[in-house]
Image (cartoon, rainbow, N blue to C red):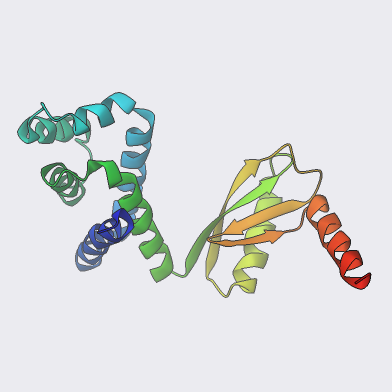
Length: 181
């Protein structure tokens, strides 16, 4: 079974638990911290994946590292240890956050620009794309990309909205080529 399918199943289970206990927002906050810790600490990942460290030691260590998280999030992490699935924890967290966002009519994306956008510029883009995509809210992460000459490029899932100058020039070039055929 592919890791994406497995991650989705874990995320679905945690999502259902969050709905039952009305703790979705708390789970999102806690899992965001867990993901950040896992990404920033390669030693922790190596420890969790090490075959000579017992599962009991791994679970005990997770309990010490993530003392402040809810019991449900901690038990999910311990379950991943038991089933040797800690390598897909980040993917599970991403899937879970996506489920929560979909349920709340929220979409996430990235906006690429030549410089950091001001809060007002980012808010304006979020509002206009929320209307365009029929969502309650859009959350955009600003990524500075010096290769962009001007304008912005927005990525929402698998769709890219290219409003860059180089993108417009490419489209003009394609139109000229098509007109000459």
